[in-house]
Image 1 (cartoon, rainbow, N blue to C red):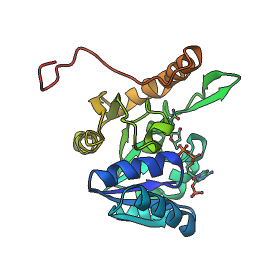
Image 2 (image 1 turned 45 degrees about the vertical axis):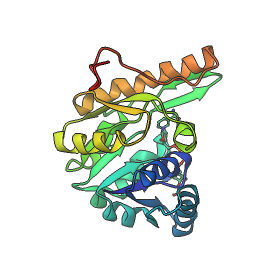
Image 3 (image 1 turned 180 degrees about the vertical axis):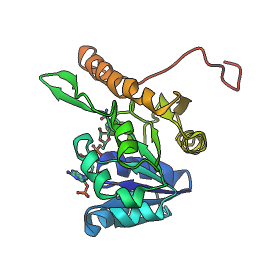
Length: 221
Ligand SMILES: NC(=O)c1ccc[n+]([C@@H]2O[C@H](COP(=O)([O-])OP(=O)(O)OC[C@H]3O[C@@H](n4cnc5c(N)ncnc54)[C@H](OP(=O)(O)O)[C@@H]3O)[C@@H](O)[C@H]2O)c1
């Protein structure tokens, strides 16, 4: 699968690209400027020798990908999606951002008119096959290839095929278990709940992740 990252030059995009490259996929690091994309590609190639990694400006990266991850800061996602709306039409688009500001050790949810950042993508590009995922995973975890992620992630979306494709991809990241969280409008609860996880990180001086129990594993657990 060809996987693109819009704003793939930050720790989220580059770290995820490394993990997918390790799983044998083609990755395309996107940026607003080609030279930054090339630097991110070089980072991926040195972390994962033999990686099939490429660099492109965001619009080209989107055009080349079968699945597009949005990995820009949450407050830049709207303008980024608006500027790439034509390119994103019809694509599988994964929104991972959370509308949360951290101030004085407090996590504050920034209310979204669309309900969630994932739903906002769908509002701007109605033909996009939008999936919300990876909200619960701290960006620093993506970047540290030596540590297993060890978390579930709730995956929401209205397009069943797109959701299956994204869940199959995420399941290839060691330690990560994607779970079907239902329709895209459930994303608002997942995005908002991350404020609770961040609060717990402060309270317990921890790096929390997220597990749902009670779902049977194929091994009977
Ligand atoms: N708990 C968490 O920490 C957590 C968990 C899950 C998801 N996330 C989400 O992951 C996303 C990415 O995180 P990150 O730390 O990798 O982000 P980042 O490093 O701050 O930004 C990633 C890239 O986005 C591009 N960008 C920055 N400002 C932009 C703007 N105004 N317009 C367009 N592009 C812009 C830049 O790329 P170029 O300059 O190269 O274009 C930048 O390198 C965030 O939305 C975050 O909410 C966070």
